[in-house]
Each structure stands twice: as structure tokens, then as C-alpha cells.
Length: 413
Image (cartoon, rainbow, N blue to C red; front, side, top):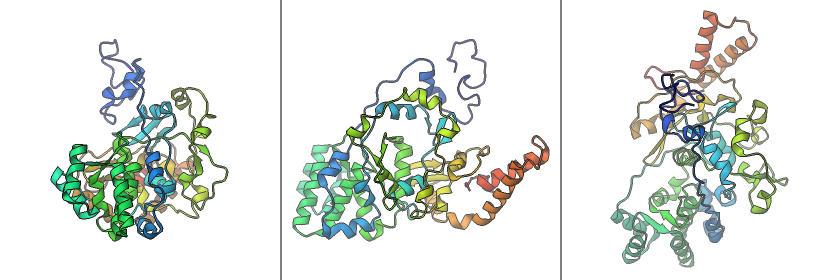
């Protein structure tokens, strides 16, 4: 990589980095650029919310069914303690928001909807929750309506937190009081708000809960119809993945969510040593990667075709772009050159429509049959590389796995 003012200023792109700047358009401001030029980043500050999950414990028996019906109960047993910040930092240096992927020597990798489904057993189909930033008065009204606190209590709490937040300890108190009063639906809302804000939507404070998420539990019967896996992916892509350091639990049974397979206590972490993570990432080879980690788990959690959805996803005002066509190796396919990204930003209604009607827009069986036959011909070298026919077949394979549609959008297979 070359900085401004060097002899290679006239070279296209970043020698030592991306030579074609049309994909990673923000690379000049990326941390990888600074690291390459010898400017080490400061240490990351990591905050764990797992202790707060432990403090509230498991839901009381009277609300277990209400919590389970939302699809979020796996969070109770899958809370992961944040590991070595050096490991997370090494992956931060390789995450690029333009592609929503980690760029590694073995190619691009990312966290997919299939990962979320297998690790957490979350629903990855269903509606996308719509909400907007709340004013203080809207926060107060939401607390009064859904947690049944008085206006004075709600106003005092929002004054203390100075915004659309409340304290985690305050939410726990509300939960306990509503349990004592046998107000089970309200207790379930308080429990779920505490749970998701300590796990899915954790923030750097480790103290405050964003009240906007309470609206997702207004109607607990409807809460189970949300695509919570999309919420996870949006939060990860928007705030960067929290990559954790874990040891495998020898007693793990496949009946549990896949995330339960790893131990994360400090006692287990002390035994993990190795070369600096940056150097280890640089030395990765194809054989070091477990491309299909859920093979043994498929009997309990099958691959859902919605995992191949490509395009914009949203959760409330957050909008991210899923690009699974760049990481088809993670789905057991041979990686071809991915199609160019689509930069046009869709409206929230269009994003919702494309997500909800994904199955209607694609002939899955037809695409898969075409792709498999094309791959077989190319892998058997029945067509000479470099010929026009070879190029046409490669183009057809690209289209079958994620080619441009008539309106310029791209959906992955």
C-alpha cells in the first residue's frame, strides 16, 4: 500500500491493497490503510453484558411460554463472554462495509443468516420490525402503556438517563414488581426488553436499555412473527461483528443451539495461546477454514433458502446490504467472480416487499439445476479456459448464482 506523496502516487488503487478502488470505495479511510502504513490503532474497549443477563436469571414459569413464543429464548443460554480484544481487533482490520465481508487470504467470509439460524436457532423468516427514533415524550408514553408505570416514574427515569434510555436495573425492578402483581404479559415485556438489550442490541454503556426496542413486544403474539435473525444481522453489520474467542465444550449435544458448543469462561480462555492474531490471519490457508461447520447440525436445523437472500435488509431505521453471492463457498459452492454491487438505496417499503416476497421472485430449483450442471462442465474442463464459450458459461453461472435482474438488482443463489 502507498501513501500520498510517494513515488507510486500515479498507480491505480492501493499497491499492497486493493488495486481496483471501485469496490472498496472507502479504503483510504479504512483502518487497514493506517495499519499498512505503520499507524497502529489504539486498543479496543470491549464491554460485556453477560453479567446483566445472569442478574435477571431465567424467566419465571408463568412467562416461559410467552418468552418462548417470541423465538428469543435461546438467548438465555447462549450469552457469550467477550474474549481477547486482540482477536476482535484483527478481524476489525479485515471487515469492509462495502461488501459486508471479512477480506482474508482465503477469500471473503462473512456472517450469514444461516449462521444466525444455526448458532442461535432464531427465526430468519418473517416480518421486519418498523420503528423510528423516539422523542422523550414518546418514550414516556411507551413506558406508561407497555410497562404500566406511572407518568411520574417514566419522566423521572428518562430525566435521569437524558434520552430514550432507561437503566437496566430499573427494568429488572419493573419485571420483579410485575411478577409480584401477577401482571404476566407486562412482566414478559420487561424481561424480553432486558434480554435483547443485553445481547442482541447491547451498547457500549453496559448500563442503559434503549426503550425503542420495547415496541417489538407490544403484541407478544406478533413478536414471534418477526425475523429476529435479520435483526441480529443488521445489528452486526451496522456495529461490526463481536467475534469471540471460545473453546469447544466436549459435552455439547447437537440438540442444543450451535452457539452452546463453545465455552467462554475465563478459566477456559487462559489456556488459549498463539502467534499474534494479525499474523495468524495473514497465514490462513484454505485448509484452515471450516467451510461447512454445521454439517452434523443439519438434522436439527436445515439450510433455509432465505439465507441466500441478497440485497438490502432493515430493522427499524437500520439498513444494511447482505452480499452472500460473495461468499458462496460458505454454502458449499465454488466461488465465481461476484456481480457488481447495486448502489441504489431502496425505500423501507421496497426493502420489506423484496424480503417478504423473496420466494416468489426466484425459481430456486431451476437456478440450482442450471448452476450444478454448469459447474460440472467447467470442473471437468470440458470447455477450454479462455475461449468465448468458457466466458459465456462463466457468465451464466454468475447469473444463476446471483446475476443481475431486469431492474438492476441482484439476488443470490
